Image (cartoon, rainbow, N blue to C red):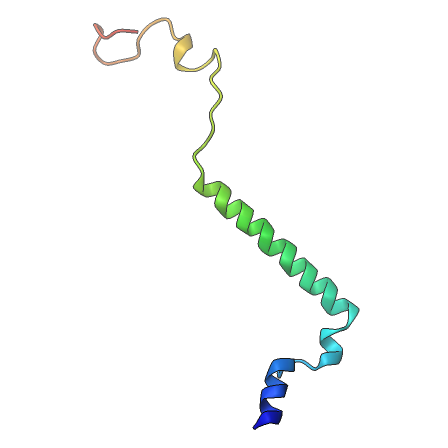
Length: 73
């Protein structure tokens, strides 16, 4: 029973030689960076859009485009 617990703590799926190899460290680093990148992108989608006011857009129209001709500009 104690031997099984020790194997679970070390890792049953992959042997220790694989977990300590250089290519596995590179793969783990790539996965970590990719996870952080997607986390930042996901959080950025939750934030409201920041719009910079400029002289263009609605303020530049000299006459109304409303159906009601008596509406204000």
